[in-house]
Image (cartoon, rainbow, N blue to C red; front, top):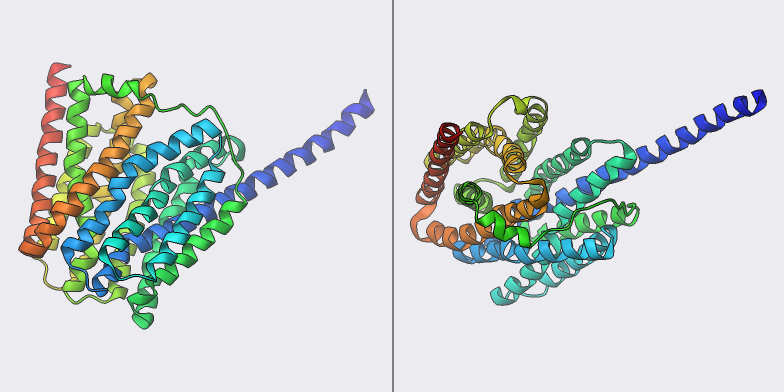
Length: 403
């Protein structure tokens, strides 16, 4: 017995060390993959509008191109989410999507036709928009094995976005926006290489219960919440889609555009951690009202400035607008959606935040920007944010009075 006991101790310790080392390597691979995926997102969000602007497209045309992503994301997210559940794989879908992205960006080199570019970007977004929710699912599943919390992996996505937003802005000073597609191909290629080493974690993923959509839509308080989310989401997507174009019109360099996006990306990181630790102490609806008010102030300031350098302190307000909004909205959603309809609720939220809001902001917003100018465009976004702020606060008092 003594020999057996003494022999098992070192063996168990060695086994534990091997598992710990493997888990650490896999967590680092997921961090690297998240970093690379958000590098691509930084290029698409921050520099694609400038690329198309330099190709001679108008604000309305850029708005239409920008709207193709949210439009197709409604279908792509549901399709690939269902495929992941059915075929019990996330890794293979991610690898396929990255190959699709690479092909679509490669084809953009060969055409100047607006119609053809719209179709190519539609196909690109079809492969790009499901990346975040699928990679988030993989990270959440991996935590059961690696022991690494979701936030400590996902934070590298924010760092990747910040890095590329700044680094590419510096590079474009020397190469010009014509190099945008080359950099995008490089970031997609890096993501692809990391994806090949990912482990295809599986778990008890709950499938989206489509029948739950109808039950959700019969609840007035939930419908009201999604309507308010749509309003604030439209204003956010207006800002996101046309900030780079606005800065370029004010004479900003590509370097300054990159620094602006860097500022916003970095500012949200500490807020996410603080809300994760202390956010539960505060009511969600008042926090959402505060976040919406900060959005309104940001958009009003952008509508008034004439020098692009002022965008940097305004971008730092991203921490108390988007940072508070995003974390708090998800927390509130989890409190009002019954467990049996949680997947349906998350699906509706994603469609509203990414899909419908992007379609409206890209098409209608682009027309407003082109025909009425920057000031009217951001004042419209400000008005929507103010409506959302007042409505969130009113909903809070109504809920408290009825409770």
